[in-house]
Length: 383
Image (cartoon, rainbow, N blue to C red; front, side):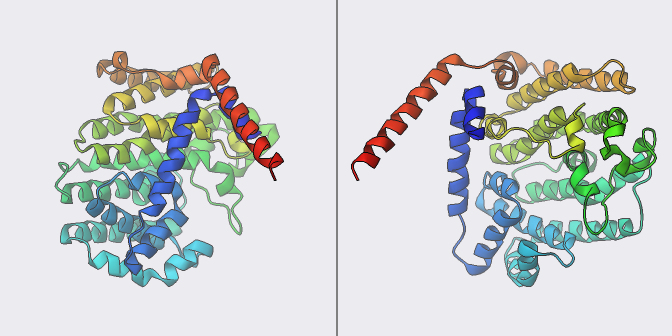
């Protein structure tokens, strides 16, 4: 009843959810026939379903390069993995074979980034994330470099100009910081040892130990710390919008834009939300499907960033220690979106869906369900 209840509450989600399901099925069928490529694509689906889906937006040559780039970095991040990660490591020779079939420009970009990321990760094995600078440096190694690498791959495909390192880095940092915020509980409860990515410079203003944030008695401080972290991540939005607005190829644009819209949406769900310290806070599936379905142009991106920043703004508590800073960041985002001139020419899907129900679609949905139920009952009685 959970998912049916969600659709009745948000009937506009139904069509995008069906489209997303069909697209996912289509993506799974697109696995190449050569054994090493078949391994790479089936592995991609197993280690990251969401990334496997956005990757399907790309043309074959670039898609192959991005798939290998992702798997090489996954392997670099996996030491003694289990389940699917073990399979990836055991059969890594298939990834190497596929890598050697890529164009030289793609190979060079992947090789360069992998070396730099390996060195950066090694540095953080013995180093805690103390300051905000450490936090930015850590995120640069694990995600900013992915942004740089993707920009190099897009350029090697001759479909895009080469974006600057600083805005490519911001694209990765915005996604990584969103994941670090959302995954607090999972990381802190990691066995055998907690993984701690929130910088001491931020959390020490609120508690004595990072794990103290998950305890009931620290709820007020925990939410204030969370809001501080979200505010820190918003500084990258301007660069991200700049990066996306310069993209020319529609497939590359969707590949880049969907995760960014998902990130601002996730931050809107997490902000001021104690549930981040109780479980996983995610955008509902229907809203995710809407993002996949509707993120086609830069106007859609400006619209989504504007809408989600409105949701964020409505959740800011004037007594929060960072309220002024948060509001000023959100106002800057909204100003950029307004000045793009794109807001008057698009349908605001997020706020409408979040704030009211569409009664016509609810009636329509009940009619469809009644027909399905009648059909199933008739079939059952004929046996």
